[in-house]
Length: 193
Image 1: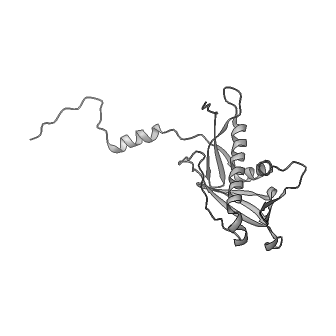
Image 2: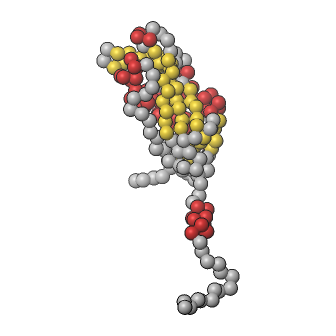
């Protein structure tokens, strides 16, 4: 017969569930700035203008060239939509083969979700959905443009959140998305030198 030890008063045996609950509570969830997609879209025009290097008084229409190929990008009509863990940037483009019809090329960017932070890591497809004549040649450039616009927008949101102890604007530490909401986690800069 096995000998049992008496329990100390005030102590209860730890179960795996109790340990898991304690560990989960110890993980601090990031503090996000929540930006509704409608508001993000209003701020997007400034980010696209800066990323495309378009002066304020100039037309928002930009023509990209690659060899003999040209692609017209309407930078002031870029739009953003959000779903859990996904930001989709719609970049309106056209070319001669499309006879001037603007076609929004969606750029799905996988980002973090409210309870699954991913930092600034994003991922997308090698080949975007859209007209073959556009995506065969321009997918990489369109995706890079959309990502840089999203990063600039996140930087604007983080800077508006405050300053670090040296008075410098905060920077984005994480980008995430939820239904209809862009989430940006502001953080202070780290000197890595």
